[in-house]
Length: 329
Image 1: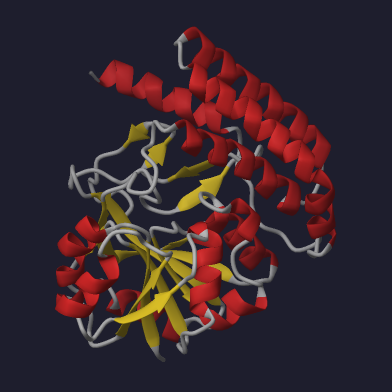
Image 2: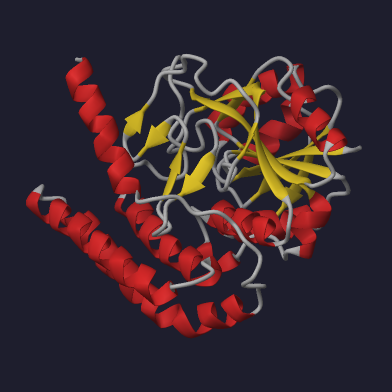
């Protein structure tokens, strides 16, 4: 079973200087590719000069995460693809536990490792943590992270399990499944495209796994900082895209309540003087309204009878954690 490790890069030379060396150290002689989204820094020359074994695929422009990977992966021959952010530090033996899962379970289509925070290595990372889920309104969360509450890694998630979505920061996926599902939805550009893809994987009858014995550290916010209004725009718009395309029943009821919650978050931004984030939510909703006909068409192209799984309201989980955290201090 052939594995290819694939990094999408755009103007990330400083990250490449920091994280390519440990990747080669713990690589197990798998092929490594860098798909470059037309960087204007010296990324390509740096790789060619310092890591000649790494293969470079050059995209003619910055396609973003979704199309950048879709275009580059067409040129890679492998059974398993590891889509790895350029701001991820890998560790010893991070590959073997995941490849064992693929070899032992043909229904497993995608896997993520345990993802810890690079700057605070005892804590989980915002992007993926110990595996991703969604609530009944399509809001994503993770074991180890709900909204801005990040858990310390006390081995509470040291067991393999089925998850709803695997983080795009370090996503292992069977190439055949990726191709058959037409890859990432390029209309997303950045953020949450892996959740949409994972939902379609589940609808196709495959499983997505979290494998705890594989561990990586993620810097996070390398493309967009967490407090960047552009990130707010993509997250709110793409969440609406995802639930419209994939939810199986009561779509309009869910959208109605989701818009109420989005509105409440907008009020919070207003009261805390985060006007650019409020504007980002408004823009996200109008961008969604413009795309409803396309999204409904895509919805009809999926099988609505195949079940994913949806949880309860995320907001209740959040306040439960806040309550526990308050009384434990």
